[in-house]
Structures are given as C-alpha cells and as structure tokens.
Length: 291
Length: 338
Image 1 (cartoon, chains in turn green, red):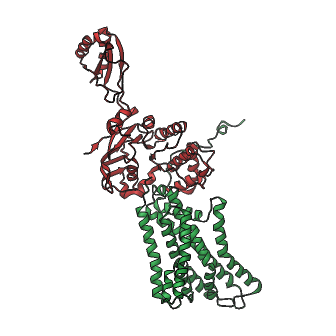
Image 2: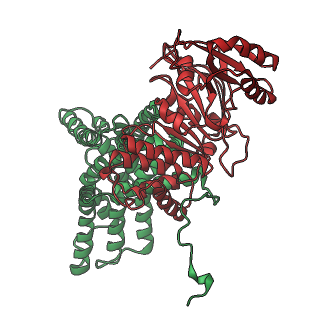
Image 3: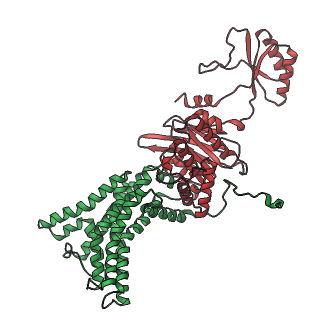
C-alpha cells in the first residue's frame, strides 16, 4: 500500500494567476520577429505553404552547392579569383531573390491585416512602429537567407579548393564584402515589397504586384536604354540598383550600369529605400485597427 | 453637456477593492465631421461591466481609446491607473483584448496562436506555452488545442479569441461582442465563462455588447453609450435594496391604510404610471384595487410597514419591490434607440 503522501498528486493546477517575469517591448519585438521568420519560411504552416518557399531556397542554393561540389571533385572549374566568382554568383540568384521577396514579404505584412492579427498585436506592448521594426528585422533575415547564404556558402566552399587556394586574408576580404552587400541588396527589394504589401491585405495580389513591378521595371528601363537613353535610366529598375551594390563592393560592375557614377547609384539606392519606406509608414499610420 | 456617473460592482476575489479600472473625463473624439464621443465621462469599478449602446454608438471606438489604439481629440483617459496615450506599452500587457473581428489565422494550431500572443505580451516562451494550454482548457478547448483554427466552428473560434485574451493573465479583460455568431446554447456557455473569469479568477471584465439580456446576465454594472455620451448604472449585487414598495390593496381600505402608514412615518403616494405603454401590473383601472407607492427612509420602516398592514386589516393583493430593469435604464438613456 502506498504511503498517504503518495496516494494523490496534483498533476495539473489548471489556469492560475501568473506572477513571473514579463519581457516588455523588447521581448514583444523579438517574439514577433521570430514568429514572422517562421511564418515566412512556411514553418508551422500546412505543406502547401512550405513548397514554394522551399523551392525558391533550393534554386538559390543549388548552384553554389553544385559549384562547390564540382570544385571539390574535379578541381577549380571556374579558374578565376574568388571575388570574381562570388560577384558572378549574384547573377545566378537574381530570379530566386525576386521570387523569394514576392512570396515572403506579403506573408509578413498582408496576412496580419487579413486575419486581424495586426489589431491583436497592437493590443500588446507593440506599437505600430515597433511592430514595423520587428517585421523589418524578419524581412532582412529572410532575404539574407537567399542573398547572403548562397554567396557565403560559395566563399567557404571554394576557399579550400583549386590549384592555388585563396589565403585566409583573401577569404576574409570577400566575406566582409558579402556581409555588407547583403543589406544593401535586401533593403531596396524588401522596402518595395513592404510598400506594396502595406497597401493591400490580399497576399496573392501583393505577390503578383511585387513580381510584376520588379520584373517590369527592368524591362521598361532596359527598353529605354536600348533606344539610346542614358545608362542612368537603368537606375529606375530597383532590381538593377539592388544587385549593382554587391557588384561594386566586390570590385566590379554590371554591364548595364558600368558607366553610372557611384554617387548616382547611391542616390538611387537611397531613393529606392526611402520612398517605399515612407509609403509603409504612412500606410500603417493611417490603418485603423480598433476592430 | 456631459454626463458623469460612477459605477460600482462586485470586486473579484483577491482583488484590492475599491479600484477604478477605467476613468474618462470629458472624452471627445471627432472623426471627420462626426463627433463620435462628445464629452463622455465614464468611471468603471471592479467586477464585470457591460458596455452597451446602439449600433454605431462608439463602443468599439471607446475600446480603441482605452487600449491606446486611437487618440482622443480631447479629454482624459485612465485605465488601471495609466494613460493609454503615453503608457500604452506598459498598460496593454495588463489588458486582455478580444476584438469584434471574427477572423483568425486559419492555418495555425490554436495552441500555437495563443502561445505566440502570450509571448508577445511578455511571457517567457515556456510559460506562454504552458499557459496557452491552460487557457484553452479553461475555455473548453483542451482536447481541440492542436487543431488548426481554420477548421474550428464559430463558437470554437470565439473561445480561441477568449483564450488569446486571457493566457497572459490580464487584470482587465476587454471583450468586444464576444457572442457574435453563437447559437443560444453556445452564447450561454460563453457568458457563464465570462462571469467566471470576472468572479473566480479575479479579472475585471469590460463586455461590449448590443444585447441587453447578456449584459444583464453577467454584469455587475453597465455603461451605456449614446449620442457620444456615457451613463452608467449598477446592476445585480451592486444595487442597494430599493427603498420603495408597491402595495396593491382593496380600494376601500386604501384611505385608512394610507393614514396608518403615514402615522408610522412612511411616505405614501400613487405609483408612477409606465411611460412606455407596457402594463406593469395585471390589475388595470377599474378593477377595485388601489396602488400605493410606499417609500421608506429608515431601516425601522420595513417593520413599521408590515405592522401597519397587519393591524389595518386591509386585503393586501400584492406587496412588491418595484424592479427597475436594464431595459428601463437602457430605454431611458438611449431614448429607445435600437
């Protein structure tokens, strides 16, 4: 027979008051950021929500994995400086980054409006601005997954291959440039995506508009450039501006913008970040959330 | 013109009464040309308080102001001793809010959603996870907690919303039309739960509704919004026992009884007729009965009334405490607005 003190145990006390620690605004921002990253990656969502994101990530990483794999097996097939190989790699991931932005950014912004979560978030320590801060952080982390991860993988993979492997200083020189290039690439694309997403609660609409805007901008600017317009007309293409930044940082330039001076490029980059950001801020300042 | 009234209610066990949960002074909100709130003075005490008003009266707007989601044009607001305009991030973790909007993220399991919102409210992840399960069990969704919200019925979604609002253990629970879309049985179940939260679990509850019956069912006091102004009234336990009695006696014995009652120090008058056309008494004019309204001003008067009735030998058909229900209060306040 069991002793009386072992006869019964309280396994579940049920709902009870909570007097433990509370994290405040910083905790709320961190929690929303983590949750948004998970949502953006399709984690915790049904299988259908994971597939497109997974495919795009695969497309971004596959060339790097293949190049590193081939280099390990048969030697350095690129036969060019590491910095140039990495610079060229950005050309391989352009489509993946655009597709990723078009898929992920609306998930971060539109879904909260459509499902009433925005109102619930603003009934927590979050304000509109700390909410946007968390979303911007999540956005940059997600875009870094496809704009930083693959080049970094390539750098690390190629660092130990080839007949004359690059030295540690050469590798570090490329790594810091890739690290700096990531936000320079991600910010304008993310800002444009966020601006579009802030204007609608329908994710599919935002995805379509972002996709068209990013692709159409290049087509229009390219057509104008082909008709004899100055090369600076290409600065009207946000994708071109965004991807020109890593090229310049890695000691080169794209053929379309090689005649555009750096100050014009920087000014265009600032405009592509500032104007969409202003749209986002204005949109959220005006959003009514009391229901 | 502004209306200033104070509500008092039954303090939840464990609370430190009396506290002012919500206080607004001369609150005005203009949206475009429309004055949504026009000098609303509200003072809500502990317990369960109903927020009533016709559609478009500004109930949800007032809630938005209390949460700091909107800023008033002028006036003062104090919720749990804090100003939502300046102390929003400190105040809101102490409030649980269930919005009127019925939609929720469809593809998220209920327990994940509740835990996430509890974490955003500041709870550590492990505590948020544990408390989300506890909250879902409390609202009756323990077995369903891992189901995706999109597969749940309207009643279950309302319960998920309630669990989201209570998981972080708020001091004040603000529920905006929580019974929308529920059938009568579900509505009653939810109201019982709301009452329990307000009485057993120590939360102050502000229940916005346009349904008088449900407010009367669960609330200690009520704030009625109409034409941008607020008025308040205590209900249930908060009401002091009425000092008037309606006395229905044979018409013949009425004069003598009136004299006897007045001699005992009681005030006697004819009762006020109903103003809304409803018959409050089964006995109508010409039925040979007299109706007297007796007002008692001292505690000894109740005994004096009983003795005077016994000694007068009058045929007493009824002695009752006139009820002034929420319907009367609402109609008086809103002028019958639907």
